[in-house]
Length: 160
Image 1 (cartoon, rainbow, N blue to C red):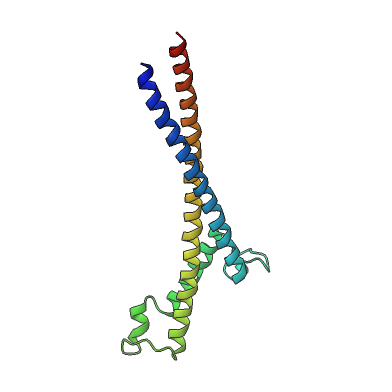
Image 2: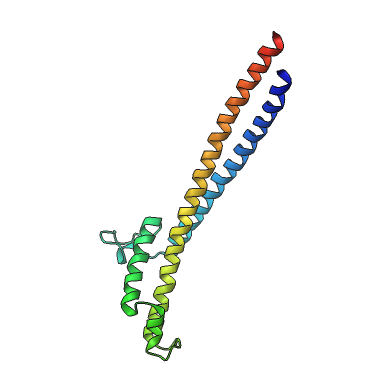
């Protein structure tokens, strides 16, 4: 019986340590990348009051929820210019004309919309990575507890 517990005990401990290390890396990466993205959004200083009702003057978009609201608003404005890209090009023979103010406004809105949606995605992804990391750390703690129980059982068997 003792010979079966020892290899299992080692495997459990190796998995626990690996889970702890990987979980810690995930939490660090998630938090640090989330902070970097938020910092970049603050540097861009896109005013939230332009897109979000009730936002205070001077407040800038720096959260996923604010970015989502602003991107949705810009999308509505862009679709007022043209419902889609094909409709935009319909009045110019199917070619994009960067000197056409309508085309230029549409593509600038598209750029801003994409920037904000990418921020929403990136912040959501960093949150997911952080949560996965926390889960891995909890698994490491649980496996550590199993390892302690196996070691105690091993000591009981070896002393009897």
